[in-house]
Length: 258
Image 1 (tube, helix red, strand yellow):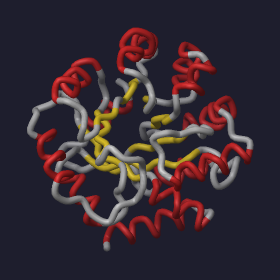
Image 2 (cartoon, helix red, strand yellow):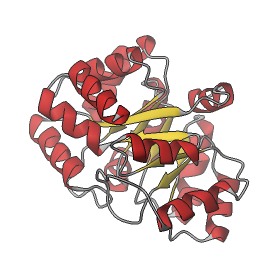
Image 3 (spheres, helix red, strand yellow):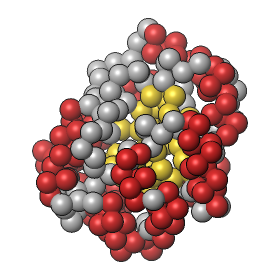
Protein backbone atom coordinates (compact mmCIF):
# COMPACT_ATOMS: atom_id res chain seq x y z
CA UNK A 1 0.00 0.00 0.00
CA UNK A 2 1.18 3.51 -0.77
CA UNK A 3 2.54 5.10 2.43
CA UNK A 4 0.17 8.07 2.16
CA UNK A 5 -2.88 5.83 2.03
CA UNK A 6 -1.49 3.71 4.86
CA UNK A 7 -0.96 6.77 7.04
CA UNK A 8 -4.53 7.98 6.66
CA UNK A 9 -6.08 4.52 6.97
CA UNK A 10 -4.27 3.83 10.24
CA UNK A 11 -4.46 7.24 11.94
CA UNK A 12 -7.84 6.64 13.63
CA UNK A 13 -8.96 9.90 15.24
CA UNK A 14 -5.42 11.23 15.61
CA UNK A 15 -4.75 14.55 13.92
CA UNK A 16 -1.73 14.54 11.61
CA UNK A 17 1.09 17.03 11.27
CA UNK A 18 3.03 17.43 8.03
CA UNK A 19 5.99 19.76 7.63
CA UNK A 20 7.51 21.34 4.53
CA UNK A 21 11.11 22.31 3.99
CA UNK A 22 13.02 23.32 0.88
CA UNK A 23 15.72 20.86 -0.15
CA UNK A 24 19.13 22.52 -0.19
CA UNK A 25 18.29 25.22 2.36
CA UNK A 26 19.94 26.21 4.59
CA UNK A 27 22.67 23.77 3.49
CA UNK A 28 23.10 21.71 0.34
CA UNK A 29 23.75 18.45 2.16
CA UNK A 30 21.21 18.79 4.97
CA UNK A 31 18.22 17.06 3.35
CA UNK A 32 18.73 13.63 4.91
CA UNK A 33 19.38 15.05 8.38
CA UNK A 34 16.23 17.19 8.32
CA UNK A 35 14.13 14.18 7.29
CA UNK A 36 15.64 11.88 9.91
CA UNK A 37 15.11 14.43 12.68
CA UNK A 38 11.53 15.14 11.60
CA UNK A 39 10.64 11.46 11.67
CA UNK A 40 12.33 10.92 15.03
CA UNK A 41 10.37 13.85 16.48
CA UNK A 42 7.02 12.41 15.39
CA UNK A 43 6.21 14.31 12.21
CA UNK A 44 3.66 12.22 10.29
CA UNK A 45 4.43 13.26 6.72
CA UNK A 46 7.24 15.28 5.15
CA UNK A 47 6.89 17.61 2.18
CA UNK A 48 10.19 18.27 0.44
CA UNK A 49 10.33 21.34 -1.78
CA UNK A 50 12.12 21.26 -5.13
CA UNK A 51 13.63 24.75 -5.49
CA UNK A 52 12.53 26.71 -8.54
CA UNK A 53 13.37 30.19 -9.78
CA UNK A 54 9.72 31.32 -10.18
CA UNK A 55 7.55 29.69 -7.48
CA UNK A 56 4.20 31.40 -8.09
CA UNK A 57 2.30 29.90 -5.14
CA UNK A 58 4.99 30.62 -2.58
CA UNK A 59 5.37 33.62 -0.32
CA UNK A 60 8.63 35.47 0.38
CA UNK A 61 9.89 33.01 3.02
CA UNK A 62 9.77 29.96 0.75
CA UNK A 63 10.84 31.96 -2.31
CA UNK A 64 13.93 33.09 -0.41
CA UNK A 65 14.65 29.53 0.72
CA UNK A 66 14.44 28.36 -2.88
CA UNK A 67 16.87 31.06 -3.97
CA UNK A 68 19.34 29.96 -1.28
CA UNK A 69 18.94 26.32 -2.30
CA UNK A 70 19.59 27.07 -5.97
CA UNK A 71 22.67 29.14 -5.08
CA UNK A 72 23.85 26.23 -2.94
CA UNK A 73 23.64 23.99 -6.01
CA UNK A 74 20.49 21.97 -5.32
CA UNK A 75 18.99 20.23 -8.36
CA UNK A 76 16.27 17.64 -8.78
CA UNK A 77 18.84 14.99 -9.73
CA UNK A 78 20.86 15.72 -6.60
CA UNK A 79 17.72 15.65 -4.46
CA UNK A 80 16.81 12.19 -5.76
CA UNK A 81 20.34 10.99 -4.91
CA UNK A 82 20.03 12.37 -1.38
CA UNK A 83 16.62 10.75 -0.88
CA UNK A 84 17.79 7.39 -2.21
CA UNK A 85 20.62 7.42 0.33
CA UNK A 86 18.12 7.45 3.23
CA UNK A 87 15.28 5.53 1.60
CA UNK A 88 15.67 2.49 3.84
CA UNK A 89 15.79 4.65 6.99
CA UNK A 90 12.54 6.54 6.38
CA UNK A 91 9.13 5.09 7.20
CA UNK A 92 6.93 8.21 7.00
CA UNK A 93 5.49 9.32 3.64
CA UNK A 94 7.62 11.72 1.62
CA UNK A 95 5.87 14.11 -0.75
CA UNK A 96 7.77 16.25 -3.25
CA UNK A 97 6.47 19.72 -4.03
CA UNK A 98 7.69 21.19 -7.27
CA UNK A 99 6.64 23.24 -10.25
CA UNK A 100 5.71 21.83 -13.62
CA UNK A 101 8.62 23.35 -15.54
CA UNK A 102 11.20 21.46 -13.48
CA UNK A 103 9.28 18.18 -13.60
CA UNK A 104 8.59 18.37 -17.35
CA UNK A 105 12.27 19.09 -17.96
CA UNK A 106 13.10 15.95 -15.99
CA UNK A 107 10.43 14.01 -17.90
CA UNK A 108 7.15 12.78 -16.40
CA UNK A 109 8.01 9.10 -16.72
CA UNK A 110 11.53 9.59 -15.35
CA UNK A 111 10.22 11.75 -12.51
CA UNK A 112 7.68 9.14 -11.41
CA UNK A 113 10.24 6.34 -11.63
CA UNK A 114 12.85 8.33 -9.72
CA UNK A 115 10.27 9.17 -7.04
CA UNK A 116 9.54 5.50 -6.44
CA UNK A 117 13.24 4.61 -6.50
CA UNK A 118 13.88 7.32 -3.88
CA UNK A 119 11.04 6.26 -1.59
CA UNK A 120 8.74 9.17 -2.45
CA UNK A 121 5.03 8.44 -2.11
CA UNK A 122 3.47 11.51 -3.71
CA UNK A 123 3.96 14.84 -5.43
CA UNK A 124 2.31 18.25 -5.32
CA UNK A 125 2.58 20.29 -8.52
CA UNK A 126 0.82 23.61 -7.81
CA UNK A 127 0.77 24.86 -11.41
CA UNK A 128 -0.32 21.56 -13.01
CA UNK A 129 -3.56 22.16 -14.97
CA UNK A 130 -6.16 19.56 -14.08
CA UNK A 131 -6.69 18.55 -17.71
CA UNK A 132 -2.97 17.88 -18.07
CA UNK A 133 -3.07 15.92 -14.83
CA UNK A 134 -5.89 13.73 -16.13
CA UNK A 135 -4.52 13.20 -19.64
CA UNK A 136 -0.75 13.22 -19.21
CA UNK A 137 0.42 12.88 -15.60
CA UNK A 138 -2.15 10.63 -13.92
CA UNK A 139 -1.80 7.63 -16.28
CA UNK A 140 1.96 7.56 -15.68
CA UNK A 141 1.77 8.24 -11.95
CA UNK A 142 -0.83 5.49 -11.51
CA UNK A 143 1.53 2.95 -13.07
CA UNK A 144 4.12 3.82 -10.44
CA UNK A 145 1.60 3.99 -7.55
CA UNK A 146 2.59 7.64 -7.04
CA UNK A 147 -0.04 9.96 -5.59
CA UNK A 148 -0.44 13.34 -7.27
CA UNK A 149 -1.95 15.61 -4.64
CA UNK A 150 -4.24 18.37 -5.87
CA UNK A 151 -4.89 21.68 -4.13
CA UNK A 152 -8.21 23.43 -3.57
CA UNK A 153 -8.81 27.00 -2.41
CA UNK A 154 -11.82 28.98 -1.14
CA UNK A 155 -12.48 29.92 -4.78
CA UNK A 156 -12.59 26.33 -6.07
CA UNK A 157 -16.13 25.44 -7.11
CA UNK A 158 -17.99 22.56 -5.50
CA UNK A 159 -18.20 20.88 -8.90
CA UNK A 160 -14.42 21.03 -9.34
CA UNK A 161 -13.79 19.86 -5.77
CA UNK A 162 -15.97 16.80 -6.31
CA UNK A 163 -14.26 16.12 -9.63
CA UNK A 164 -10.86 16.30 -7.92
CA UNK A 165 -12.12 14.03 -5.16
CA UNK A 166 -13.31 11.49 -7.73
CA UNK A 167 -10.07 11.42 -9.71
CA UNK A 168 -7.31 11.67 -7.11
CA UNK A 169 -6.13 9.53 -4.22
CA UNK A 170 -4.12 10.05 -1.05
CA UNK A 171 -5.43 13.35 0.33
CA UNK A 172 -6.66 16.75 -0.81
CA UNK A 173 -4.51 19.76 0.07
CA UNK A 174 -6.83 22.51 1.31
CA UNK A 175 -5.14 25.87 0.89
CA UNK A 176 -6.39 28.11 3.69
CA UNK A 177 -6.70 31.11 1.39
CA UNK A 178 -6.33 32.03 -2.25
CA UNK A 179 -3.17 34.00 -1.50
CA UNK A 180 0.45 32.87 -1.40
CA UNK A 181 2.05 30.94 1.45
CA UNK A 182 3.03 32.66 4.68
CA UNK A 183 2.43 32.51 8.42
CA UNK A 184 -0.81 33.94 9.81
CA UNK A 185 -1.87 34.66 13.38
CA UNK A 186 -5.44 33.38 13.17
CA UNK A 187 -8.15 31.93 10.96
CA UNK A 188 -11.56 33.54 11.27
CA UNK A 189 -14.71 34.48 9.41
CA UNK A 190 -14.68 33.44 5.79
CA UNK A 191 -11.77 31.02 6.23
CA UNK A 192 -13.51 29.07 8.97
CA UNK A 193 -16.71 29.06 6.90
CA UNK A 194 -14.67 27.59 4.02
CA UNK A 195 -13.18 24.90 6.27
CA UNK A 196 -16.62 23.93 7.55
CA UNK A 197 -18.18 23.98 4.10
CA UNK A 198 -15.61 21.53 2.73
CA UNK A 199 -15.83 19.37 5.86
CA UNK A 200 -19.57 19.10 5.25
CA UNK A 201 -19.23 17.87 1.68
CA UNK A 202 -18.58 14.26 2.66
CA UNK A 203 -15.55 13.88 0.40
CA UNK A 204 -13.99 10.47 -0.16
CA UNK A 205 -10.41 11.71 0.31
CA UNK A 206 -9.09 12.97 3.64
CA UNK A 207 -8.09 16.63 3.73
CA UNK A 208 -5.03 18.43 5.06
CA UNK A 209 -5.08 22.20 5.60
CA UNK A 210 -1.99 24.28 4.83
CA UNK A 211 -0.79 27.86 4.21
CA UNK A 212 -0.54 30.18 7.21
CA UNK A 213 -0.34 27.75 10.14
CA UNK A 214 2.12 29.07 12.70
CA UNK A 215 0.63 28.96 16.21
CA UNK A 216 -1.82 27.06 18.39
CA UNK A 217 -4.88 28.97 17.13
CA UNK A 218 -4.26 28.29 13.46
CA UNK A 219 -3.17 24.70 14.14
CA UNK A 220 -6.29 23.91 16.16
CA UNK A 221 -8.54 25.52 13.56
CA UNK A 222 -7.01 23.36 10.85
CA UNK A 223 -7.10 20.18 12.89
CA UNK A 224 -10.73 20.74 13.90
CA UNK A 225 -11.81 20.83 10.27
CA UNK A 226 -9.53 18.30 8.54
CA UNK A 227 -7.37 15.23 9.09
CA UNK A 228 -4.46 17.45 10.00
CA UNK A 229 -2.28 20.43 9.18
CA UNK A 230 0.66 21.24 6.92
CA UNK A 231 3.21 23.80 8.12
CA UNK A 232 5.69 25.35 5.71
CA UNK A 233 6.80 28.96 6.08
CA UNK A 234 7.05 28.89 9.88
CA UNK A 235 9.32 25.86 9.89
CA UNK A 236 11.40 27.11 6.96
CA UNK A 237 12.00 30.36 8.86
CA UNK A 238 13.01 28.55 12.04
CA UNK A 239 15.27 26.14 10.16
CA UNK A 240 17.11 29.03 8.54
CA UNK A 241 17.38 30.94 11.82
CA UNK A 242 18.73 28.00 13.79
CA UNK A 243 20.55 26.07 11.07
CA UNK A 244 19.61 22.95 13.00
CA UNK A 245 16.46 20.83 12.56
CA UNK A 246 16.37 19.80 16.23
CA UNK A 247 16.43 23.40 17.41
CA UNK A 248 13.97 24.44 14.69
CA UNK A 249 11.51 21.77 15.81
CA UNK A 250 11.93 22.75 19.47
CA UNK A 251 10.98 26.30 18.59
CA UNK A 252 8.15 25.21 16.30
CA UNK A 253 6.56 22.99 18.92
CA UNK A 254 6.84 25.83 21.44
CA UNK A 255 5.11 28.22 19.03
CA UNK A 256 2.34 25.70 18.36
CA UNK A 257 1.68 25.40 22.08
CA UNK A 258 1.35 29.15 22.66
